[in-house]
Length: 95
Image (cartoon, rainbow, N blue to C red):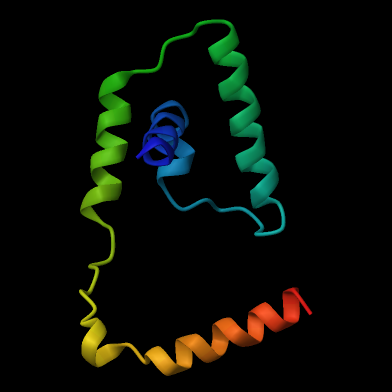
């Protein structure tokens, strides 16, 4: 919930984060990082964020999340396979 609200605040302040960016994918992390830096600068200078825009961005994200499917662990989960993967990872990371 905290991360959801944080991204909502970022999207409320920077509308470019709400839509597709026409930018090279290699440069995209720098554009997002620049938004973080500017956001922190605005916070230090106590510049307000329009709360209506924040609420709208959060609601938009909630409305367009892909549907989640309930997992029936009794039929969909292969417990033996899960234990095997756990054993392999444990052996790999803790020989």
